[in-house]
Amino acid sequence: MKASAVFAATDNASGNEMWGTDGRRATLLRDIAPGAASSEPQGFIELHERVYFSADDGVHGRELWSTDGTPGGTRLL
Image 1 (cartoon, one colour):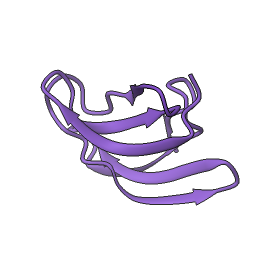
Image 2: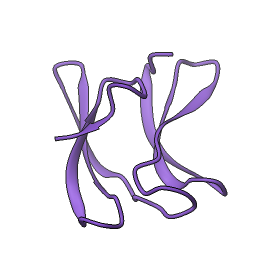
Image 3: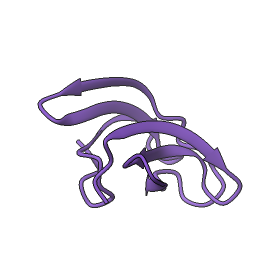
């Protein structure tokens, strides 16, 4: 699924993480801080079909990430 919208959301299994929706269903794009810990994604900026944001993986602190709206395209820069 390629998301047409991305957002931060919280569930019990993965905490507050980056999610996407295609308008029919929501999908976790990446569990940046594994497990119930939260990466707290914030500061979303869209540029050239990617969304850039900061997130904290719980090990290295807050870093710059980007997503193209797919799980495979959500990565640390």
